[in-house]
Each structure stands twice: as structure tokens, then as C-alpha cells.
Length: 535
Figure 1 (cartoon, one colour):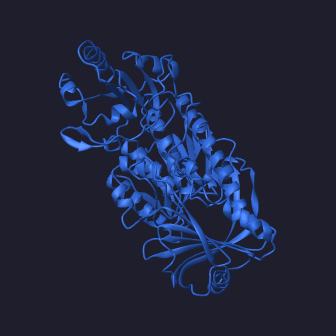
Figure 2: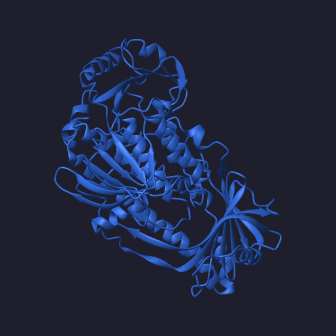
Figure 3: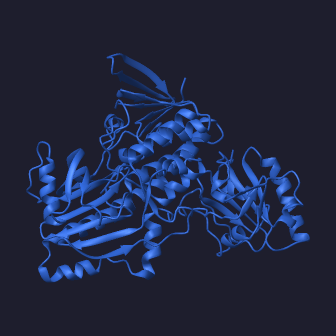
């Protein structure tokens, strides 16, 4: 019997099922649709999501044919007034990448099939009841066949109108934006000035128009605000969208070949709880917000990445179910911040049409991110600055040193490394299902290196808990036969982690620092304080 049922086979559900299957957890993934939907809105993969996909060996496949998004161009009543570039962040992916969500989903589904899983299409969940030991579900197949089944755990990845959330009678508090929008996926003739590596924002007296390149085929994803009182019954037409584009961006842009058109109203909603006993909510089933800034799909994928390793540990019996409470503790605050940020951005954009003429120049000038703040803004947009320091899984020892990344933050990448005789980077190390314990030799030798060796030998007894690595110069690590050794050729990793003196870094399976200390033998302290075994 499968241990876990994942309801929903879009990006969040595919990531969830893949991460569980990769860890050997029997998982079933169902989706009510007949296949991958080409009519999608999400077309931006953020840097942190790409780092995660790199760890799974999927980065080259998912970015095939994509284009880096390096900034925004602003227009006022059809005239270009300037642009605001994104700062490249310290990541293997310094910019987010514009890519069709359909391509991202196809890549994830292929990955799931490669590791032995699949998505069962045309299957809907119609009922569920949970008890202390599991969850009974009723499933409806497109043939009309009704199926009953039982699972230890159920994860709702079934979108903003989640059936699972409905059956849980879970509240979804929030509100809707006053402004309706028209959306379209189209080809544009005369688009030579719409650079595909930038987002284009057209401010007009009647509203705002956003144009984003949606690959492949150089298609464009258009989002245009409407008047508050505009009717949104029925289906929009290409002519209706063309009128808006001609008015706000210029008559030279001619729309054709619409893949889809639709009306849309932004909602800002967040569930009070991400977990009800044996049932979890993830992605849009737990939180919805403005599509501006492209946070939705990325936040859902990262929800899955956070929960999957924890649930795998519990299903295997290596950790208690209390570990699963940290999923909500860490991820709900992220969603709350995304909702707040996207609301501010969206409402600021919407406010332009209501401003007096004299205030519109000031408004435009405030759109440009000052250079001094550009890097921080880019790190935040690309989701590499997420901070789990308040999590029960983050432990700061008394001897915590400030020169490296602290507990709760993303463990940064390091390049120019050699592992198993091959050049690599930290993010390209094989994805493990264990905590990683890095022993840094620092710049010391003699007795200090001997202390590292002694602590590393002792860590071999924790092999079921975590995977130890020795990090140091080539001449130093030769003193550690039988250990997993990382040659830090140019001391990049030592510098990034502030490890001039011998120390340890414990990194979670999802790539966030859990603990660090200059006490080489203190890793047991972490597991004692968190109640984890590290298994």
C-alpha cells in the first residue's frame, strides 16, 4: 500500500511526489486534469528554485530555451521612460529565468517517471475521513469507477480551489482585489522593442499593462488591469485585449494566435493551519496572492521541498511526527510575507491611474530601485534570503561565529571544489537524504588537524544520522583516509563559511544551515536540543 497520497499533479504536487519517491517512500499522485495544461500563467523560475532543481540534476533540462530576466522597462502613455535592472545575486543562477510552466511541469513529470513514479490523470478526490492511524479517501475515475483507499498521509497540492481543503472545512481567510484583470497568452507582431529578458510595464491614464515573454515561440503573457466596474462575465476576446494594448502600449503591437484569454481577480488568502493531523496543505491550496513578481509557483515548489524530507523521515520511523510541525512553523511565515509584499507591489501599480497628473512623475521616479538597495531587493525577489532562524530546527551555540552563514539561512554555494576526483560545486554534490556535516580544517595544521580527524572518526558512528565531509586544502585532506573529502582548491568554501579555524557546519537535507560550532565534537548537542535523531 502507498504510504502517501499527493492530490494535485501540477508543479507543487510533482515536486512533492518526486522528492518522496526519490527517498524510496511509496507515493501515489493523482490529478483531475487529463494532462499538463498549456494554459498557464507562471513563467518565472526564481534563483532559489533553480538551485533546488540543480541539486536534483534538473537545472539544464528545466532551463532549456529559457531566458534570464534581468530587469523591468517602464512606459508612460506608450513612451519608454526608463528601466530598472536587477542586480545579479551570488548564486549559480544570478537571475530568475523566464520559462513556460508547461515545460517546467513536463520536466518534473519526466523526472518522477524516471524514478519510478507517475501521475494518475483524470482522477478526482471526492471524499476523505481521517483517524489516528490514517486517511480513508474516495476517488472518482473518468470512467465512472469509484475507488476507496487508505493512506497514512495525504498532501493537498490541488490549487486555490482545493478539494482537500474544502473537505477539511479549513478556512481560507483573506480578501479579493477591487481591480479585475484580463490575461492573454499571445503572439505579437511588431514586438522588436520588447526585449525578452525584461518585464515591460505600461502605465496609462486608464490602467496598467504588463508584458512578459513566455517561452517557447517567443509568446507573450499579457496582464492588463480593467476598471473596477468592468464586467467580467463570459469570455474575453482578442479584440478586447488588442484595444487595451493599442491604447496603453501603442498601435504598432498587433496581437494574434491566442492560446488562451481569461478574466482574473487577484485574491490574497492564507490558511490558518498547514497541517491537520495526517493531512497537509501546500502551494496554492495553502496560500494565494498576486501573480506579480512570480512568487506563486516558486513558493509552492519550495513548500514541497521543505515538507518532503521531513515526511520521509517520519514515514521511515526515523523521526517522530513532531518534526512535521516545523513545516508550518517555517513555511507559513514565508507565505504571509509573500502575500504582504505582492499586495504592496500590486496596489502600488494599480494606484497610478487614480493619481493626479502632477503626482504621476513622482510615482514613476519611485519605481527605480536605488543601486545601494538593488542587491537586497534581488535576493529577496529570488527567494535566497529566506530565514528559518526562528525555527525549532535552527540551533545557535554559545560559540557561534558571525563571519559565516548562521543557523536558519540558506547554505551558500561554493565553487572550485573537487569531490571524488571531479571538479564540482557545493550545490552539485549528490542530493542526500541525510543531514550533511562539514568538518572544516581551516588554515591550521598539526594538532588542529588531528582534532578534526578525531572528531570526524567519531562521526562515523553517526553514519545513519548524517553524512560527514572533510573540507580542506589538498595537502591537508590527505590525512583523512576513508572519509568523504572535499578539496577546497582556492579556499572558496572556507572563505564563504568563515572557517579560517577548524569548525563544523551541519546542513539540513533541504540546504539550510542547522547548526555550526567551533566545538568539533558538539554535533550531538544539536540533536539533543531539537529532539531529532538525524536519522
